[in-house]
Amino acid sequence: MASKKSNKTKRNIENSARFSVAPMMDWTDRHCRYFHRQFTSKSLLYTEMVAAAALVRGRAYHLLDYSIEEHPLALQLGGSDPIELAEAASIGESHGYNEINLNVGCPSDRVQSGSFGAVLMKNPKLVAACCEAMRTSTSIDITVKCRIGVDDQNPEQILPDFLNHISDAGVTRIIIHARKAILKGLSPKENRDVPPLDYDILFNMKEKFPNLHISLNGGVQNLDTVTDLLAKGVDGVMIGRFAYQQPTQILSEVDKKIFRNGVISSPFEIADAMRLYIKEHCEKGGKPHQVTRHMTGLFHGLPGAKIWRQCLSKGSCNENIDFFDEALMAMTNSINKSAA
Picture 1: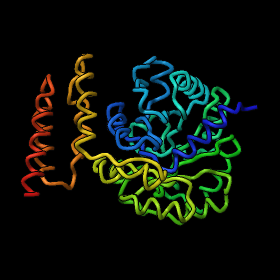
Picture 2: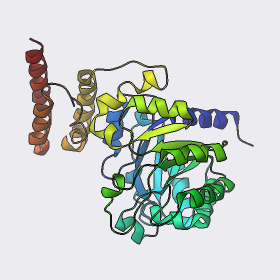
Picture 3: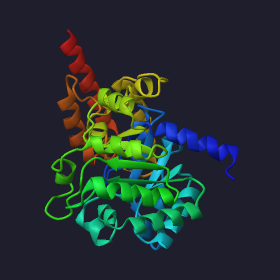
Picture 4: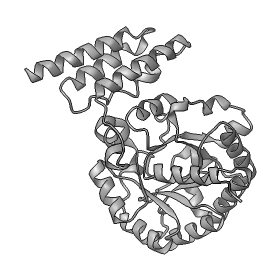
């Protein structure tokens, strides 16, 4: 029987899942997540996909590093071996993650070659076996992120069958990217834009599976759309690229608009908070660019945004953070000049 504490944690994570930032390879590393957390304390954040084999066979535990401030935080795993995924999930739980998510949506060739990602949409029984094994080895939520189908599959036929299998395995939360994945002929980038969006099928799935917590992913560009989708019946919305490229526009009002509790920080306040983080990172032997590369969109849409991006880019090889202070000064001057 689940403890009162675990039930409360589960409810808290479900609430945080009303808005989440998508796991994105090469983007949502620990520095990116810390940056995003400065905007929103409520949203659920995800790691990049981590291959289960890297943890189990490679013992690459450094891939699980994070700052405590990043919670609530989910680990996304890639794999298709139930035993290996179960061990990787257990490792993730022992490192303090609040949720383990199985990637059944990535269409890249390198993921397909390992028989995981979106190609697993073709094998729902295997996905269910993986989920069941992961649930058995952990006490935290096991979730799935998938597509509505792949290649020539008919989503109206295969998606209900897929959801039946994973819900029978004990999965209660799922994130669905509302596009098909075309495994041959389209690049991962094209798979984020070319296959048409189908939000209606997600609403249909919510009607067929009312007990499932279903989050919608794909094509969402602003918070007004998020609130509209939530009002129409999905349980959560996940944003990827737009949250990364325009963090102030997307993330700064999430706590106030979605969670009805929070304050809005200015991009300068965010920059001040990140300056200390960058300084501490460098004192530990890190490079400032490892952090600042995620911050180029901080002043998106404001006067001087281009200068900000240029300053961060020019300072990418610096060993100290002087260039960051110079970038902030340039932004201040640009905004003051435009207001004059």
